[in-house]
Amino acid sequence: MFPSSLLVHISCRCSRRSFSSTTLAVSQQVKTTGSPSKITSFPFLSLSSRRRCASDFRSPINFVTQGNNTYSEKMITIPYLTALTTYFSYGLLFAFGQLRDFFRNLVDWWKASNLQGYAPICLGLEDFYIRRLYLRIQDCFGRPISSPPDAWFDVVERVSNDNNKTLKRTTKVSRCLNLGSYNYLGFAAADEYCTPRVIQSLKKYFASTCSTRVEGGTTALHSELEEVVADFVGKPAALVTGMGYVTNSAILPVLIGKGGLIISDSLNHNSIVNGARGSGATIRVFQHNTPSHLERVLREHIADGQPRTHRPWKKIIVVVEGIYSMEGEICKLPEIVSICKKYKAYVYLDEAHSIGAVGKTGRGVCELLGVDTADVDIMMGTFTKSFGSCGGYIAGSKELIQYLKYTCPAHLYATSISPPAAQQIISSIKVILGEDGSSRGAQKLAQIRANSNYFRSELQKMGFEVLGDNDSPVMPIMLYNPAKIPAFSRECLKRNVAVVTVAFPATPLLLARARICISAAHTREDMVKALEVISRVGDMVGIKYFPAEPKKSQLEEGRVKVE
Image (cartoon, rainbow, N blue to C red; front, side, top):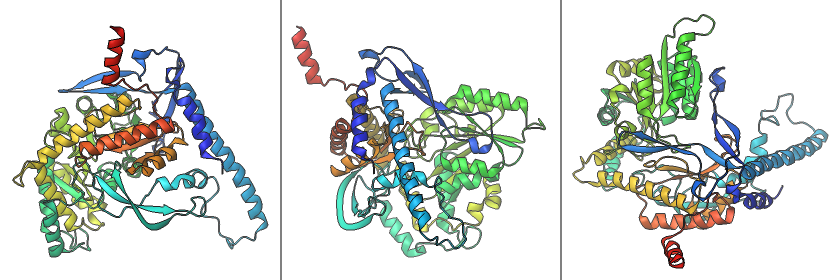
């Protein structure tokens, strides 16, 4: 294997060159034409020779005001040498991987084949990335835990005797600070109001209904849950499913088909991508969170009509997310809703990461940005983030929900959501709304907002490149170089801080990152510890691409010297 430490050394030496007069500005390039298989984003590089000074060391930022909130519209700027070393590292890994495959094929050629005439299931190039890149760092992913995913949890240690090809669990556990789980409001651990009611529902209904909703899988809890969810999100009716991913991938093909047009944000979740592909509708994408480009795409395709026939579209649906899970950015919903009204297109809003986490009472981006829920035609969300449970929902008009109950495969053929999981959602929503007789829900919402904004601000002061908007509990820290992915993850784990790292193909090739998820369960002491560890590891790995802001003591010393 090629030593990853050399790649870290190469990239660390170049990571400080953020003040280079030549930088690479990386945004998301999308294709507005093509087949449904093109609904992906690709890294686009543009050279800029603008000189950077001490007052201009961060990426270009435009501030956008939505209601009473101000958010930043930012294009990621990568130092030129950092981009080059990132490409160099991937090229080196690819070259050595191909070389190892060449010698492997030579050895296999001399061995007798045991396929007995069958074609190999995994072909060389198809699983090259897994064998030669992913397996080398797979200890950074899929780490098993042995406790609830609270602010702190137990991570099971694993060992490998074959260079990470296989990992074996040990009996040792490490108590780690949890910065990776979607436990936004802290409901994933034992709760004084939710847990007793969940246990009671388990005794009454047991763990599963063992049936679909249209057969014997609908209990009183399922009916109550749909009423509670509809009231919470501000819609007349709702339909719940047993899995969040399936909510998008199974319902989009029911809503639209051949002759329809889906216009999707270029960075929408994979569940939306697969749902759109399975619908048979024509798919076009617009530049991430850019309403002006959305309007241009809408106008052009309404004017052109359907391919070949140029007939009017049967239906147009614009699909966006409330908070984008890999970017931490909040959707520009008011502008998008206004454009969709103008062109008579339906709005499909995925609130997987925003429902329960943002807004004064936790009702998501509509409440946060002052958008009337009546202007959003289809509202989707999941219960796996803020509510400490599982499953998803679709909320809309009574006619829409009734139609889905007759046609949606997730409702007709899948086992209904577990009764204890349904009770957990009902109870957590009651806590959020204060119907448990306490103010804990309001306190949790205030805490998640304060924690998120504090943590983001401190990371930026330290010199990290942090994506996303204020109020968002999701904050990606840019790593860029592939060797920094395992280095950052492993060094944090050594210091009892568990983080999630994400790279290609989940992100564009250049834009590897660590995704931090903040919880209301985190105390200020937890966040201070996490910041200290991340800062120390950031210095070690070399991911502080911007100069740190001077501390108050350093500023005071500077003033004294000047005087």
